[in-house]
Length: 331
Image (cartoon, rainbow, N blue to C red):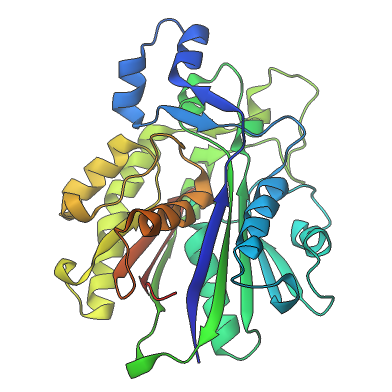
């Protein structure tokens, strides 16, 4: 039996932050400058009382409502997020109860950020193909907006909130086709400080000062850009060597939707054909670990990813962490 992606759904918060909204707060900027640099026109922002689990739960309920699977059929739940409800307990445990998943369902949380969706697929594939599970529900939720200082225009132009759900199931595939994998990973923790909330977790607790910059997400964009430009061509080349494929064999390239400038420079440096390079952030923004599943769902709905197509999924960013995998779309 092989693991494959059976269904994807996602949910966006109702509240929006447009470029016009940002211009009213930062009049020294202009709409054209923001959109030309980021490729983003609109970001969806979670309400004050709305958490990543709420967004992910709504995506999961949409998946169940489609009829593809019932809650009682889920035997493993993975919750991907860098914005969990609590330090403890695990948000996945709470979602098991809220979604009515069976009591024998295993759950765990995964904190990986922009590479998270690919890591989640790797874990789900291992669980299914080792016989530990039959139906793995991956719920992804991010509310980075709660980590941003209201006056930090650099990060507020980029990040949006979202939730997504992917059902990974087992199936006998014809001809020995492997619908998920292989994978290529990379880690360089020396760059972790370049995208960090310093005052968080157990090492450094948040201070009472609402203007303390260490209480909020700090991003050193140029360092991240240099790392991505250096490492990602090697990751993609490694995947091509591992699979013995060429770019002509790939129907769609689905990269983490960081920002348009970075994505275009990456595409040009690696030499990916523009007509097969998926860009999907104008009305959504950078939703961290949600970008890959959202892009996959939109590509399927638009008809650019069809049954039998091969897609290269690539995640990169906070950590630093990188991950890539090949999938064959066959729901």
